[in-house]
Image 1 (tube, rainbow, N blue to C red):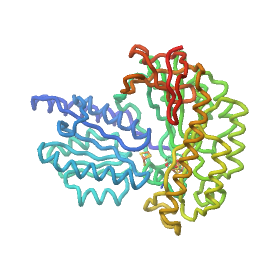
Image 2: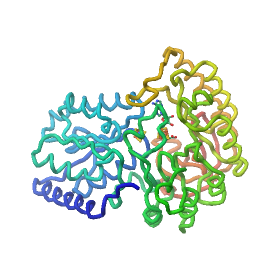
Image 3: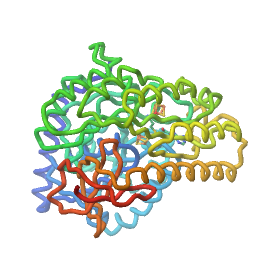
Image 4: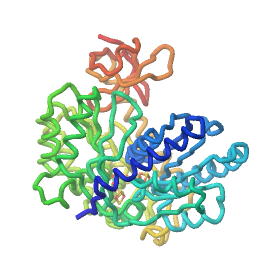
Length: 467
Ligand code: SAH
Ligand code: SF4
Ligand code: F3S
């Protein structure tokens, strides 16, 4: 069972927020805060909690690091590239901070939880005032206060197995779409992946907490709720309540109101007929499944510790399509895993041709210190990995363009979810399967479900107007 942080502990943090607010007010100006987020939706959701705390302290928000009094960078460790970007941006803040003495720089999130990275920050990035991992996020106010009290730099990387904190305030990014974490952490230890090391073990939020938050979101007018977890399909196993993810979907679906439910991610090893049936039968659940394949080669899947083979994956796709012929299927694929041969890669290409994904997220293998795959012999030259990557991307684009072309002239129902910044098609919207449609029309349509006619289709997006 997960360690639950008590409501009293969160209350203590909120009291710190009130103390800090008085202190900032006494200083004569309202502090400006900037929260910069790398990584996945889980991190986006965490950043909304950081903003929640900052708002309780009386902060308003900015995107200008020169103006910010408090900068919080929420990092991602999934690939080396993400960490390099973070370190580059962090280094650049040295100048900003010199111009703005008293500016507080905090770094947090998955990358900071890696001991090697924490050490590096401690040694080489003196500008960092506080650093804490995902497990310490709930006590951010206390850490900040400690630093403001003139204490030494604060590093809090404890709590690796993980906890659950309910009642942390949230400032959400939009008014249409909302993230709703249903569980934290991961138990799967895919051999390439750092997430289980930095996010701790799988722990599910209690169904009543999730339902209460979902009801509140609907009451607040949110139209699009995305349930989050590294592997939502194993939701509830640790709770012993008998409520698995399929049942949870049905319970959220039963909340009255005009909204849609999405979720991610689904690990193929735990996707079941029960889940697909729940999706098919729940009118609010989007017919979209993000089902990461990672590789089409059984040998590589074994080396990745994915616990399914290509046959099982194929049968899942067939089952899902037999129950929901219009289902949108998206995936993640890693190219150039250690030992991946040309033949293994062809297996991946064949699988992609077969499934015909609606969208694919493709990555080149990035060795992560401390994971088994980082130690596996890897003799494929980088140039060859890049070649494979390009071929896969080309195939993904071709399939996406073909699928998009099928939409031309059709009328589809979408939820208008925001602005695109484009003059001709100023709105963005999503179809039931999560496809992006750029729209003509006015802002008053945001937050509404409307029928649109598709007038143009490109590789990555559709364009349309109200039908
Ligand atoms: N929990 C999700 C994945 C989260 S990470 C799942 O299992 O489906 C998102 C994606 O990043 C993964 O699906 C994988 O394709 C990719 N990824 C993870 N570790 C990686 C690494 N070391 N190198 C390259 N890509 C990686
Ligand atoms: Fe990483 Fe695998 Fe867990 Fe996904 S399921 S977060 S890829 S270990
Ligand atoms: Fe990155 Fe952490 Fe998410 S490593 S992908 S931010 S869980």
